[in-house]
Image 1 (spheres, rainbow, N blue to C red):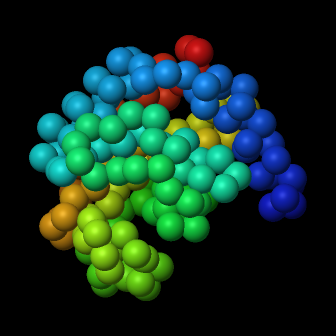
Image 2: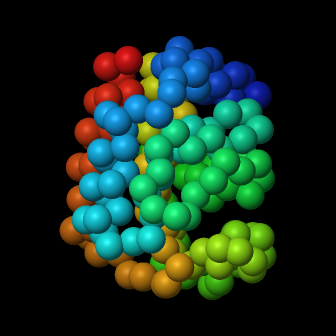
Length: 159
């Protein structure tokens, strides 16, 4: 096992190896964020990359989502695990209810994100769903989000 500092160093190196941080807008990824937004009928879907200090939006479908400090990012929590993180109502979640994205503009309520991995299996980013209304998320929704994530994952590893 790696200590947290060493694990973070490997994770950031994996992100660098993908070349995605220097890539311009890429239609390969935009089609997946559009598909996710439309499939789940949410305000927005994003593909975000998590650097050492920031969340960088690589692809955005909708009007919610912007580059953020890592401290404000929901996605930072998502990359801690190898499964989806779902927040049905952020105002009722102790981790997020005081987050400026919840208490102020855009008044985010719903978040679902699935981690994306880079070379070596390190979690480097997230495919996320964002909405201004609280929502439920079924087991079928989990399967659908995972299926879309698998397509994004294949594009990342094809780089």
